[in-house]
Length: 182
Image 1: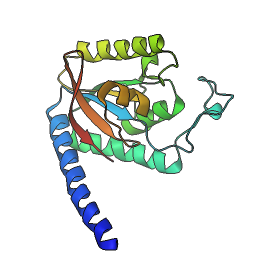
Image 2: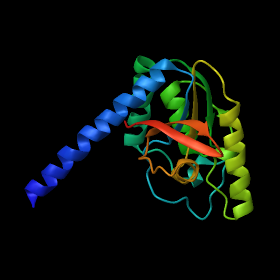
Image 3: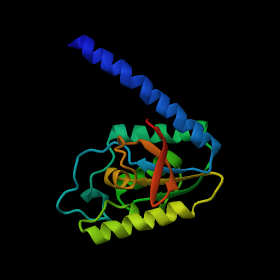
Image 4: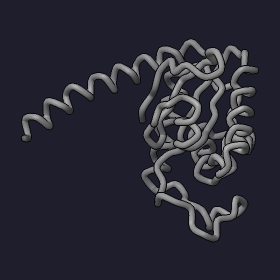
């Protein structure tokens, strides 16, 4: 059983390292859009008294998440082209990830908030995000800090906390070009 687990680990780990290297190669060239899932958090769901304007009522970055966000920023600074713009969900965990990682104040972009419950509102959020991505034509990178559900809806990819997914528009959706794990 241990041998099987070790064999599976060894098969998966090189693939993750290769995916990360390919992602960095893209980001080094610049001109890309990055969907960044917020760093590690303290819980799984926001409490019943959730208030978008009050971080005390939200799930927030854990100590490990704060360290992860710092690592994200250090690696972006060392391995990627400059960041032209940073857009963030209004949730504190996303804002804190962006502020810690990139040492800049991100632009608030409400469509990056957790997807709303009804289909029409979800579709409107996705359309607004897609419009922003399609409009991007800079030579540096654009980072959008958001949530798991949003990235899954946009790409079909389920990133880990603090994982970056490099995308480009393709047809009506997005094509995943690479991923970077931290």
